[in-house]
Each structure stands twice: as structure tokens, then as C-alpha cells.
Image (cartoon, rainbow, N blue to C red; front, top):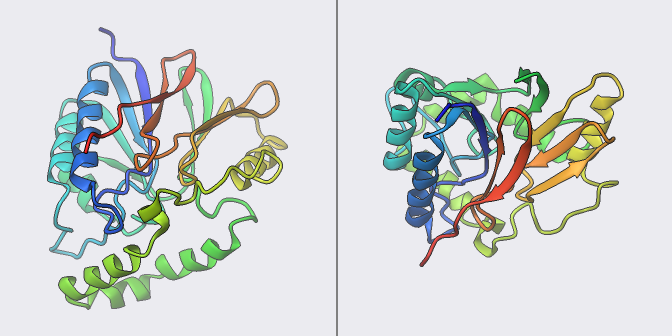
Length: 253
């Protein structure tokens, strides 16, 4: 089979303290990776793959062994794996590129795939709309504050992060997808429409909102949100001509 498909997935939130099914979801995600690697040209992970990640100079977070091993295997086979940092795993530094061979993106990417123009990003902080997170992002991306955090012992620092995350709305499955605001109020739809005023794209592909959707913007461009692997277990696939939003199987508890 010719390897030509491009796969997109986001918001797996591996290791989320607010969830009690992390092992099942990790195994399911690895099952999906095993399936898509058979005909994938590239795999794009669109952010928040980990619920929390902070790598020290000589220490990486415990866990995720199955996923990290599978991603290393896929990269070693010659399939490109792209990783967009999200608001939960913004502190991915050089471990994934050096140890696994993953291509890490910290900002939005404009690219052409099989003659189609793509605008790719996790989706957090884009445009003038997500003002609250813009302030947090300035804090999280501060080199000085990252240095300060790295001075804390991992048991203490990661413990704080997990304690904070344990109160997340992930626990009731709502997360960002508490409701779809409508195309006239969805920040990422509004952002895509703003971009289209100056530059044409065939597809905008985002995560972040945990709300899988495929929205026609102007008859020529589409907004695709890959959803999540907390409640929806959805992903997108581009076969060189068409983009399709699909659902993988849900875990059995």
C-alpha cells in the first residue's frame, strides 16, 4: 500500500490526574498509531498529547512508555511525526526531538501538502480572542520562570502540577467542549476567517477545543477541529485529495 495519508490527532491528555482511565486511553492511542502507521506519510500531533510535561536537563517525566516507544518506532521507520506544543505540554523542549526523532513546533505552521494549503496549530492564544490564556502563555514561556521551576525537585514540582490539574474539568468530560458557541462566536472560526481576509488556505486544522467539527468557511476553505481522546476519540485524515474527520473506537472499562 502506498504511504500517502496524513493523520492529525490532538488532546490525548495522557496522564491526566483528573481521569481514572489513563492506561486504557494510552493503550488505545497506541493501537491507533499501530493502525495508521501502515499507510501514513506523516502524523501530526496537534497539542496537549500530555496533560502535563516538564523535562529537566537530565530528567524526563515518568510514564507514557508505550506511546513514547511507539512514536520512536514510527520515526525510526521514516514516517515524519510532528508535535505541536499545546497549553498543557508547552514545556516540551529537546527530549522528544533528540530521543525520538519527533519534529516539534512551538508556533503555528503554514504548509503545503499535496498541493493543498494548510494552516496548522494547537489553537490556544490565536488572534485577539483568547485573552486570558495569552497572559498565562507569557508566564509559561518566560525563560526565567522556566529556570526557576527547574530548580524545584521533580517530586515537588510535578506534584504541584498534578494537584492543579486534578481539579480540571477533564474529570467530568467537559473540558473545553462544554458547548459549541456557534460559528459566529467560536474564537478559532473567527480567527480562521480573519486569516482568510489576507491569505487563502484550503484547511485550518486545530485542536484545543475538544469539539470535533468540520466547518465550511467560505466555500473554498474548511476549519477542522480534531476533537479529543477524552470523550470523542476522533482524528482527521487527509488522503491527498480529501480531508475526513473520523472516530476511533472508545475504551472499554
